[in-house]
Image (tube, rainbow, N blue to C red; front, side, top):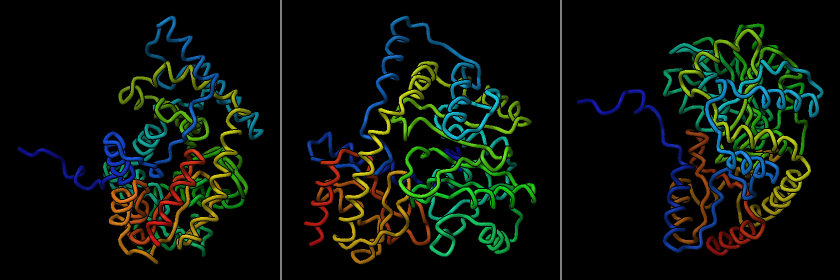
Length: 386
């Protein structure tokens, strides 16, 4: 009997999660593990979110909501766009999701048919590649390097599509980006949106690290087009990873199609998380204090990583990652990550997660942890390599 489908065999492991699992095992065994492997803030959810959740648990009446979320949260998210970006959107265009991961599933299922070609940046978030492969879509990885400003451009998309010999049906861009930290400004987003519009290509803008920009021009794609699918999350800026709650902003004509798929795949996002998320939207002052701590960690890594002998491989303009070239010490980032965890109990993610071609010589370090842990990790790595 066949145990797994062919498409499951085509999905690569998410190495960051494998590293996290091994780090957790070591921590439970008593080792002093510092994890820089996953993008998980060390701060708790905002106090207002926790209090709202406690109150909801107190009365215990939690159940299904509309498939696209409560009207109250959708309205609050629409208000967020007016307050933060000066953009008015109809709350009916907002879809609340079970984390941004559910948003990607819905976008790929609603917008594409099996075999369609979707372009993503390389290096880039590995779950894009893995979900697309699992759904039978063709992934075109477009190199994002210093020549392209570490982002996608119409020119780089043209070259990649010609090389693949297939027309693009979708383009997915993250800004700020994981793992590079690249922030694509308004002009770059408009160029991509115009390129996609002229060719009937779906444009998906991953904005889950909005609020965590340290340099550059943080712009939502809604500022340059109404045709993009926007995906965002409460996991990063709002420090609510385990609550599994995110949202999308959809073109008006696509809302019902997304809703039909969401009804069967997810029923609805968890009501408790929706209640907490709505409260979190009003916690900017508290969250900006957290952001300042990431900024201090960023400054630390910008100084210490080159001193250790690593080269910063891309801008650290946003998110909370340092993507570093470690080829002075290894040409096997997987082995390097394993040895670093086993020998000094520091967990980081091998670059092969993000770049299957050049990632053997890179590592990603998340600096979303506590300042003392980040400093300790840098000291351990420096001693280890010296």
